[in-house]
Every structure is written in structure tokens, then in C-alpha cells.
Figure 1 (tube, rainbow, N blue to C red):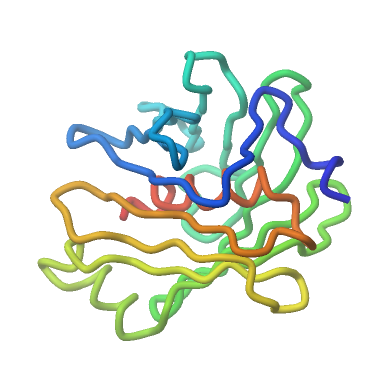
Figure 2: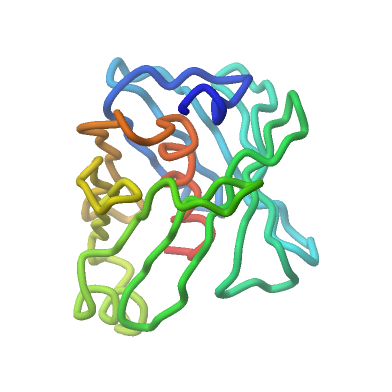
Length: 191
């Protein structure tokens, strides 16, 4: 199953990654456990549909995440492999002011592969609507299609977004698209 969803330009072999956002705009870098940059991404400005190209640590294009519609608040975002130009997975946002829920689906069949959920209504509302909400660290749980725990996304208190992605068990999910999806959710939601 997981080979079907491999992103041609990257191999994410670690079980944990740290992602940091630039202070200036929606630019991100992800490092592995050894501190090596494995992924960089940024939001393209002045696009009718949101678009986020990602490169490896050497600057080679690896994938792009594109919105399915114009100004997509609650919709879908396709993760497209830069080498094959194939849609691998779709990130489907179930919009709610009380819960951030993302489903990672097979791009062809629509089958749910994993889900990424925020930690609860109180934190979600506080992060989105309080004046200093951006300083409340976010936390998500990653589960497989059956609801079994896969990993977490844990934010840190800092001036710019900084968080750790930990994969405890990727047995039943395609690891690379799940880690990539976790990295782009912050940019999509402008946390």
C-alpha cells in the first residue's frame, strides 16, 4: 500500500521532524532528527488558487500542494508529485470553528488513509479568535483510517510557528504523504 504514495523526490525515513516557519511570510523548513533540512516550502503569493511548492534540502522540486478551488477555506488540496505530475493524495478539510479536522485521502478513489485532528474545541477557538491565540501551541493527533494512533504534531511557544511531527506507527498509512500533509496544514490554515 505505502509504495503507491511515495513522493519521488524525497525519502522521509525518520520518525520525527521539526518544522519552523519564517518570521516574514509563509515559508517553512523541516529538519530531521539529525538537524538536516529535508523539506522547504512556501506559499505562492498572488495566486487565485492557493499553491504551496515544496523542495528538498538541496532546492530540488519534490511536490506541490494546490487548492481545489479559489479562496478554499473548507475544501480540498491535492498533493502533486513534482517528478511524475501525479496527484498522490488529497487533503480534505472539514471546516469547523471548534475542531480542525483533516482527512488524507487517496487521490483516485477518495478512500480515507489517515486523519489529522486538533486537540479540542477550547484550544481551537482560542488559537483562532483570541488576540494572543497565535501563541497557544497547537497539537494534533494523527490516526489511520480505523482511528488507531499513528503520531502527533506538537507546537512550541515561540514568536514563529515551530512544531514537532512524531510518527509512532506508520504501519497502516503511507508515511511520506502523511508527514508532508502535516507540514502543509500550518501554512494552509495560517497558524
